[in-house]
Length: 454
Image (cartoon, rainbow, N blue to C red; front, side, top):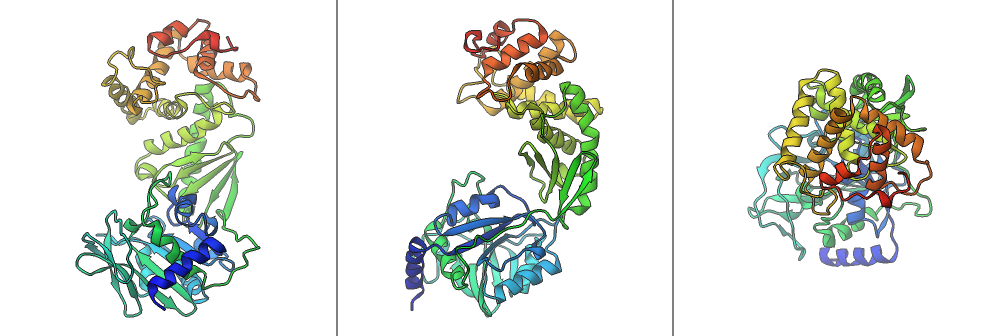
């Protein structure tokens, strides 16, 4: 049977009876793209997906027929146990997709690739790319070619006929290795490049392993946790060496956040701190904050980590009513303010640079509406910082704390929304002055008649 016909049958099978149980791994390198976005681009109509947050070698793959991996970050190498676990999963009938590129310094995924008989290289792939046996249209974001063993079949090659995507059988299962540039990247999952042929290819290989489609498969969460004061610290084998230092930074930051806001975190919030295997940021779900383990070259540089922890934790102070317009800027401003209290010079520079960037768009901050849909990011952030600084200057140190205290007292927990008009009303009561005219002088289109909090 021809390769093209196999793909056509796989596409029909996918639309008729989804049978793919995939797991996207985010334990070697966390990204929002792998946290559900890869599945929504390539697999949402062909089965179920789960995430692996925990150490890869501990993952139960018995009811999984597709494992999706990236090349990883050098801070968290693929352990020998994880490499052996993945190889055995494939030999037992599973399908592996490893999206990886070589480089001057080879990524951790190179060790896994070599275990499977393929080497990542430093050689850049040359466009245009073409499929070897199928009429695929290939979109490519750039990457490196592969050095294959004899067991591999080339599926996509570059202009010099060097392999960029290849597959091989391994006992009962399949391994598929290709450049990361063949697949989407965006966290909002709006770039499903090559989905027309990637999806049926994954289905064809994955469905060679029988799974129980009636029994949902499970991913795994970070396997280690322990109490650090009132906080539960969560981490994996790979992030364990960062966990204590990050917990110590949070312990340092927390009292400063209380002093700046005049209140404790919202009820039930910030109970857990998850250490993420990435240098790319973090997130807050309210009850849990997640912090990038080596953000800003931590621990070599401390200020970026202090700002990040304060930012993500700060979201737990503003809840249950997120701030309008400046929910993100106010969180970073808290981080900057903590940095200033700790006498970190980077904090002042960060503040001044953002306000200066805003002034390039609106020199005196009186002309541009920051609530406009097309308002530039630098304008919104710069003007927000300017407002916070001016309120502290005009109404005395501690104005921000008075605002948070008044917000907690004035705004019911079950209130459905919290608008900019509401926000200015709370600020007005906090400082004892009608601030609506002042905000309007800064081009905020606020109106006291639109809020019942005044």
